[in-house]
Length: 267
Image (tube, rainbow, N blue to C red; front, side, top):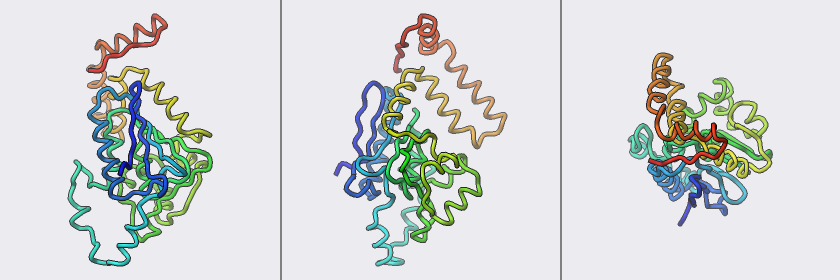
C-alpha cells in the first residue's frame, strides 16, 4: 500500500504521508515509505526544496496502536535488541532514519503540520529544517505514555531547538502542547492559517536561489551545532571557495544586476 505520495514540480518535492484513515500513524509500511522517499530525494539533483505534510485530519499521530498492543500481549517476546541496536542507516537504526533522513536530504525540507504531531510523528517533523504549523495543531513527546523514551532521533533533534529543561519536562511528562507554545519554545518555526500554502511559498522562494549555495548552507548548518569554532569557520571557507565563480554563482549575480529571474543549472 502506498504510504507516502511524492510529486516533483519545478524543483519542489511534495511529500505527503498518505494513511489518512489512521491519521498517518507509523506502521512498518510507513517507516519503509518515509525512508525510501528520503533516500530517493537525496539522489535527485533536480530537487531544490521539499515540503512534507500529512493527508487527512493530521500530520502524524505517532506509532500505530497495534504495535503497543502486541508489546503488551507478548511481553519479553517482543524485546527489540536485535532490531534497534544495529546501525542500519549510517549512524541510525531503521526507525530513527525515518526522521533523520530529512536532515540528510541535501536541500531544505519544510514540514507543514496540522492536526497532531505525536510521538514518532513529532520526531519526523523535527527532522525537517523548518516547521510551519496550523494554529490548532497539538504536539507531544508522547513515548512516556507507553512507558518508553523517544527513539526516532528526538533527543538529538530537540537539543538544538529548545532549552534543556524544557525538553526534559516535555519528555518526562508527555504532555500535549499547542502550536503557540511550540513556537514560543522553539519547536515550531511559524504558525500559519494554511501551513501547506505557506510552506510551498517558502519552497518556491528557496528554489529560486543558487542551488549550490542552498545545499552548501544546509551542510554548514547541519554540522555547526557539534563543530568547534575553528572547524565551523574553516567549513565556511571551504564551502565558499567551492561556490565563488561557479556558473550558478555568476548567474545569481547577473540576475540581480539585470533585474531578472535567475536560470540555474543542475549539475
